[in-house]
Length: 382
Ligand SMILES: [Mg+2]
Image (cartoon, rainbow, N blue to C red):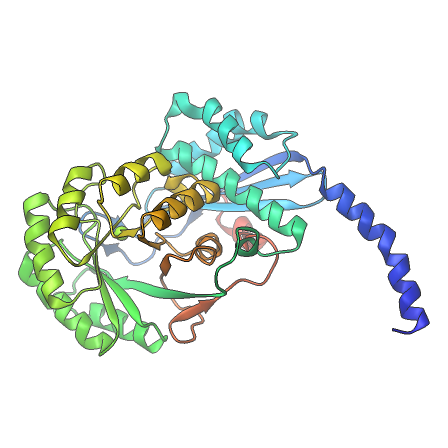
């Protein structure tokens, strides 16, 4: 270092210290929300849902006195009205609690929001609202520290195995040509694992779809099946034995989420991994499921579970029981959380992603990478 560089470094120091001191006293000064509505795409189906129709999301921005803005984008894949409810909760009940809070206290914020919101419910859209706040809070913390959130959470790895949710049901697809195209595309994109929907038709139809998926995926690749709650206990077991026999990697959500005993029975009877959790709210529901040994792969949904803080606690409970972890959905938030957990095996994704060896690289930018482009907000705001 020459003399000039030394002087420049010295001159930069006071400013840096002032910034650091300021960061210690960050306060939330504003709560802004937008509801977005995306245009409908080609309809796709699972065993019980029609998706890609009306989809809405609520974008949350938490402003701070440090000039840092925390972002969250909480989407509803098939519901246009839900985001309006979440926005109302955020503006009327959440905002008064948040103003002046220090974002470095996410668990205190969560506790105060619970008290402010429990009359509205302790699951459902209330958790979507709490999740939005928690994601934005972690975005602020990452940005103020200059680190991507997975490093704030205690990083375990910097690459994450991913799978493609690509085997949907489509209109006019009796010959499965559209289904085959979707699977083929995923393999061309470099995926090593794909998930398909089952249970919309009779077992023969499932068998046909699984055979085709295994064939397209090829040797050494994995195929997961997802029944989206459609079965009763008898059907779930009967079909599960067949999925298991065919070599599927996991069997997802065979039963409605409240059937905890049924999940325990299935997990006991079958060797194939039982994956579930996307429709459970908070760690209390997961603690129930896990204590009953009702899952092999624990799959919290970041929005329904209640945000990053809650999700990480669920992940840790699962880890303590020696269970594997996967995300429901595949946003940047999910990626940041999964990278911090040693028991994480897969992130769910859809569409084209940059993959190397079936894995996705960690985000590099400070924060959660949860910002929504201004152009999207202008275009889709309702
Ligand atoms: Mg699912």
